[in-house]
Image 1 (cartoon, rainbow over the protein chains, first blue to last red):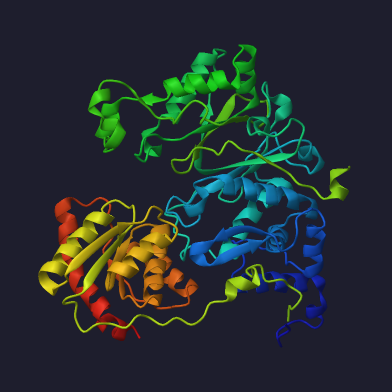
Image 2: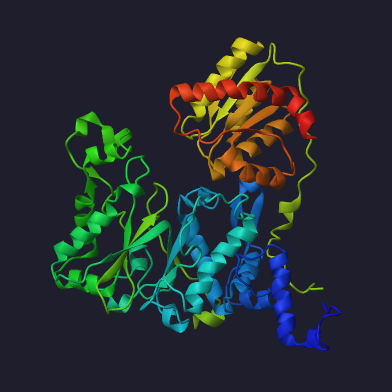
Length: 356
Length: 185
């Protein structure tokens, strides 16, 4: 690696060697644009030791590309993303959760350019240092950042779906492959999202939904829960997110202050969902004026009635994350027409890590 | 130099087993041949292919038209649809690749039909040539020729679709008879 221009001894400098290795990985086309950590056999073995799953187990297939992905290959990509070995069971659970989404199959090549919103529940949040509080959408926390990044590298390197080639996102979205957050269970008035997703309370679990963007709702001026719900419903009903085909999509990452306001007034999660389903509606004429009046919007039998923008009450996923320091929440936009699978994935730890 | 670094793109060994590809032989012209149309669910795809079918019947002596629509824009056509086309067609027009996923899978459909010795003409819009080219490489046929028509397709009126089909027919005929193939090789 030395050239005549190198100062004497530079090739032996470990920092220079590390830089050269990073450049080598760039040259192979393996990175998402940021530096990666090189994956070695011993590194992969350390990752495999954290999971009960076999190295050769197939965790994903893309028949149209003739590609499959193994657990060992996922480990290599998780190393490259910057994960610690003990994050790897989360990466595998996140991958499985993403693949429960009906829309995942075509997502990675889509012009929509969606990205997973990954949610972690359970005691692993504190053990692994997964941020659930301030700045939860990142950056700044290794586990959050690298688990999400690992999913992106698995898609890129495992399926060979790369931007400007098979990946055809028109614009993509800010924060693609970088959103993994812990639910702030301690600040939530309700059961964890993973319990909604069918996993026992107190069990580490990962949920995922593919999203096209997030939009904040800043409402700190009222103690009236219906006023805050009105604000959410307005954002949920935004026409730009409607693609035709029957309904738009939306979910909420509630900041703790908004969640606790609802809790104080006795709203369950289902109450909030029902209210939003009933009020996130549009005038059919508005949609027609925006060139979106075809199909169910234009149904003559329904003329004069408001058009519901959400698929159903239960298909508005709601979780709680962030700091209890301002009444700010986030609306997120699930990709495609299929709502969240509604299923969370328990994290499978190796015997050594499960503590049993 | 860095032999100890693991290549993260390497999957199961079986994934790399794909033999060399030979494209279908081409007829001199389309007279007397049975045409297949393989549409996807993108807006205007079926309408476009229908117009192409009519023009090939009227102007090029195609005898029958078998139209099929695949249900999924990402994956290749399901086997029953491919079997119908293999059984009932001598040539197939595939389209329209008008999105990231469907442009790639249209090329894959075309290559699968070629493997069954059926000449295929794949139509993509010119916004998605990178995706189409990438799929051709993935399928082991780098440079597989397809017809790139001007983007977009989805927002065209029926007249616009007809005009686009009329403009595309000479290119489609060239692909099916081998003139475009010769030019590409």
